Length: 336
Image (tube, rainbow, N blue to C red):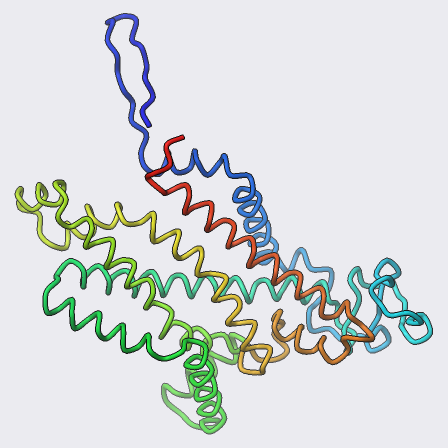
């Protein structure tokens, strides 16, 4: 949409065109749900990044005198007669787990794990998938056919099953390689230092770029015959410059939307793997681990599973709402 400014001195009309990004941001500001979701995500990122300063206690510190503690204000969640067996204590704002660890602190640190997986997963997906898809779509012909048939072949394997198998393999190799040497030992020690996140990054990163490659290829195919690309080629621009300077900025919007909508999948995958014991290593907190531990005391202490479950649900919903808002904002058919 153009903004018309009347120049009184000259009596002429000048048009100031908004960029695609500015126009999309203007439409995004009108979407209240998307903006609230964005604010929630920013707040969550800040809390996770400054977890040491925000969390009331160390996530691994055990206080067996307060195990299964429930604050007074959460008693309504417990079954009838819970006052006869529950340890009622206001030492922790959201209670404590079976080892006396602060649930609030573990939830905050668990957000760091989930967001780290989301950021790394998105980065790998964008780097590998976009480059692969853009090259495939731009070259076309037999090269495009071979590259996309490879993607189709990999797509035939269920994503979650492949990640589970890879994680099982990595953990088995780690157990067998203890006391070894070389690169394998370096990776194993690095994985331990990262709380089990390294192998999780590798497992998710090997698969999650496939969808992004398809989207990038489709966008390049729709733009590579446009006039501005032909003009760049006519003035002597090489293929690399055309891809980076001309095609990539024009396809970036749909890629951002697709990646934002894919982030809840990364978070859910990490939580599910941690839930079944194939995610991060203890005592590193994860919402999936907390839910798994909370299931054991679901009837007696539902607060232990409710807190991480609500955090997981709100985070995935926020990314979904933000992704929907970005999709509407970048939609060129939106005219208002």
